[in-house]
Picture 1 (cartoon, helix red, strand yellow):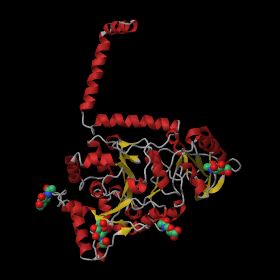
Picture 2: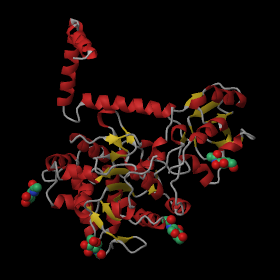
Picture 3: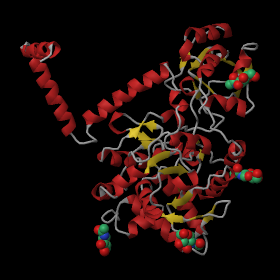
Length: 481
Ligand SMILES: *[C@@H]1O[C@H](CO)[C@@H](O)[C@H](O)[C@H]1NC(C)=O
Ligand SMILES: *[C@@H]1O[C@H](CO)[C@@H](O)[C@H](O)[C@H]1NC(C)=O
Ligand SMILES: *[C@@H]1O[C@H](CO)[C@@H](O)[C@H](O)[C@H]1NC(C)=O
Ligand SMILES: *[C@@H]1O[C@H](CO)[C@@H](O)[C@H](O)[C@H]1NC(C)=O
């Protein structure tokens, strides 16, 4: 017996009572933790704290070192990704623009359009991609009802509304169905609940409760064995080279669920509009391995508040959690309002959202269709021909502009600020928390934020970007191999 081993044994024997009790308690906690269900609160809490720690590290020491490593799981998007495009009666006109935009960047993956109203063969044709690939349209709620997954829920309000709309569409009462379609969109679209009517109409999120679970199942049955499934809203654009780069680093054989997380620790879920990515193995584990859990999810769907949350809580039950490691690549905003955060300068941006109005999808499509390399957050200003961050060295202030944009809990607003130099000074004092500042002389307020937008016209305001910070971070970025 070696000396070290003997010492080890002796010190083990010398454990005090206090030590033994501590070890026993820790063991009990460990056992309790692992015997609680996957979606239990203790587990959710621990996961949440773990994500917070990772988040803190990325905020303070942004790292893109994974980009330097070679891709271990390179993919061919045309073959390996199945795209599920969600639309509703009120927004169906957006689908063609999106399919065109994806075609323009040669994103020719197998794609289905899932909608919340019946497909009338004589009126509605299947969609297609520019290379001729057929994109079938599926009435996903009807499909789910027909096969009995929603048995017992027929009298719930959302199902009644669907049936009412379906009957109207089938009767070719297009005028009438237009009215109901809009109404039902508001009812079914959980993200819209509780907002004033005007914003409801403009809001483009379609996280439809009755669509998420059956859509993924339909895709699994009809586009089987894809490495990855991508769920999109009809106003979401995807930058193909960025997506390909990200997925090339991830193992599709591992049950994985990726997106832009929202919600509190009990049920983190990905924001549907920023797009959601699910590995084929996660889909297989859910639908092939746990039909009982799926059936339960379908039964909950008519009363669940959020469709994207229902997907997440269903996956949680089988131990597949939203992976927040890559959350910074999913973007819920349009390019003009996209906040280039300090902590994601060096990372690729995968999505844009909120492209439902006017020709914004076409504009974005035409801007990004020729990108052959991944697009990084820090490049957006240059791509849009906006002010280069370095130009703020010579000229630190721009009049009638705003580089902060939308305020939230991560921005800071100072009141009673006398003049612009004071605002610039405040920005300097919060070095890592201030990439952009905006001063409003009329209100005497100064806003600072750890991000910058490409710049918005704002009468009477003064604004600028913290060039030294922007350059310091940009200089640390790696280029992917
Ligand atoms: C649409 O596509 C589906 C599936 O490929 C096919 O069964 C259906 O006949 C097509 N409908 C039309 C109108 O082309
Ligand atoms: C749903 O109900 C129909 C008719 O009421 C029945 O034929 C069918 O088997 C049921 N399906 C399921 C999955 O319960
Ligand atoms: C696709 O490309 C064509 C031809 O360059 C262009 O006219 C059209 O606007 C583009 N559409 C979208 C949605 O990007
Ligand atoms: C700004 O301009 C410099 C010099 O022209 C260039 O190297 C840099 O990539 C540009 N973009 C940013 C974000 O600084």
